[in-house]
Image (cartoon, rainbow, N blue to C red; front, side):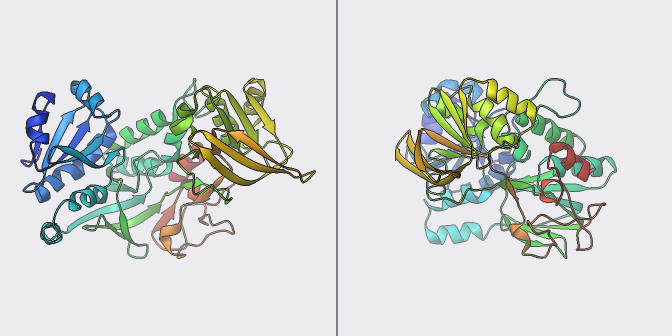
Length: 416
């Protein structure tokens, strides 16, 4: 631990934190990958800002009452204090270095900020292969490379695990007789990669990417140079593109049942979509919600028969087919309306609901590549059978690729 970072317990909180002009506190846990990731940023920043800011670590489980009093329920959580009072936001989960610096800089003079930023020393990292994306494809590629004694570095804007880590249940992954939580599968893949020697840069800002030179610039100070590059950036949920969707995202609209279903205990929910994700996630939401109404634009669902049968047997779930979504409205904390049009009659109605979950498909994460990678007509990377792109030394794998099926199994197969 850096000399500028101090670890304390609750009995010293008033003295050390509230008694400091400016302090930042990291509530951490053991066996917590996001906490380990934050430590690689927290301690170096302590060396830069340590003359002006008190950097403090507190073991959350060993100081439960203090954590509860400060509304800290997860690890890691960062809190900022100035002159004995809470200031700024509560940061949690995959915390970026730039976020920490931004909120520290707000409480220092512009001149001091420039001076401290001038202390940041450029860093250069050289590796054999840099992997963009830490989902199943990126992690599998890293495992195979590391086992072959090829240096691999996984770079991800978020935490390792990819989209599957937000899936409440994976029910058909080979080797697991019983369904398992998506986060658990992602965690096991990540730990396996680390155990094999794969290096990580997680929750980072990617400032520049040169596909031709296989170089990256991260967090404004680190340059990564590689011999080869693997793009495994996956895909993200496709938006509806209707009025109200963007405005109420995170305030009644969600793309993640695992993240948000718990907030709708005993309430009415609308799910939009008819594929596997929509139906399977509806079954999870039904554990909490009073009712779940699945709205789909076609007359037939696209989900597999087993998932459909389970949904139709769930008394909380009902279906509205052949309906087009026109708009989403919000009237209060838990009062929303979804305007739908019957595609057969043209009749428009508004569904009263407390929340809306959208599962209508995905779009590839290729925005950072500036059109230099060849793609198919839907924007997915057009790689050959050996996962080679049109650029020498640049490969791609997983859900970002053009393919018929996008599953965890196909992602890890591409990577292998």
